[in-house]
Image (cartoon, rainbow, N blue to C red; front, side):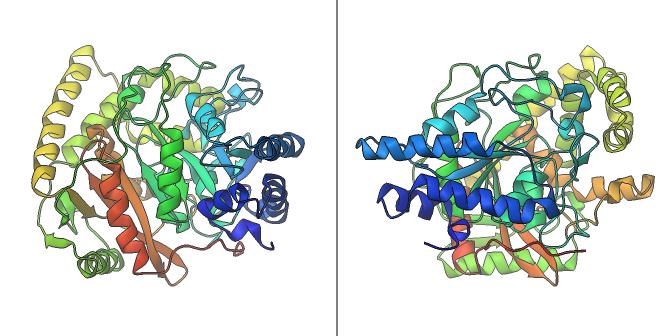
Length: 467
């Protein structure tokens, strides 16, 4: 079988289970693809070919014994450098953590392995995973395979870049302010931010997460097909008692009306015409699939959610974050923190409490809205993917980036699932849309995403395009 790297994760898993393809052959193809394109992209920054092949060989041996290797049987996947993988540095793009070797793996890694995945490498992120651009002083800059002049997104930019270029068939990412959804959008693939409590997370190598991290940061899958996102979510969502927030909610909920609220400019977002066109096109695709799509002028609060999100994310220990960024000396992290000083600096316990109280109010409003409209269709970003390192081009450029990312930042406060669906290209630039549903209703996001995908051209792995 040629060009194994072009196959979807689901196709690889099925071929391996049917013995039409071996896990070793899939791993060899992934490593060959990594060797061919990663020097140009710098998407994967830590990998050990011998261990990859040893793991694949173990999958083949299990199959030969008649054992079930799991739903991801032999599928090459990547994981992000900000989660523990035993024997590897949990660097998060930091020289400060380059020697922080994990003794045990995070629940995400363990669950991927239990599902039969073969981890082919670890993907790049910005320092501290703070930016929607991916580069750091430890591992360097990651490029967008579709256009090297555009950001690959962040903070899971290495994950999205690797999937788009065919390095692995499924990628792990994390998202506290768009770090799965935005890289998927920028690289022209799909990305799912699951509900709070859906995917267990914990890094034994690091201190316990702060309040913001515990209630808003989520791990999830990035892939080239919506069906692969289903496969990845099912694997990642397996039980693990190490995360006290994990919840045993079913992956498929009760029947719900196929009714969608389409909002082009939530909270007055200055949405570019190209994105308005993509949203209306996605709405038409849903109607064609039998969904009812109503265009609405307003949604529950997002701007207010954004303010509370920043207080909980950065305000809880902001000064320590700034000191760490200064010790690291990373320009992107320093700029990101400086840009939020007005909201995050000097936060008191009273202000943290007020943000948590507001979180309940805003989440309630969203849940009530989703009773009427089980799915919401809205922009991923107000603009097409940003030029590389736009956020470092001065205060006005940083403010532009921040303002365009309203839905990326605000929605995590609610704990709701959100899905980026790639819908095509505008010239050399990817474009896509975002879907939101009720808590633990990833199945509704995915059903709507599959309807949109089926009436367009699903993303295919590409050879990197030079600047």
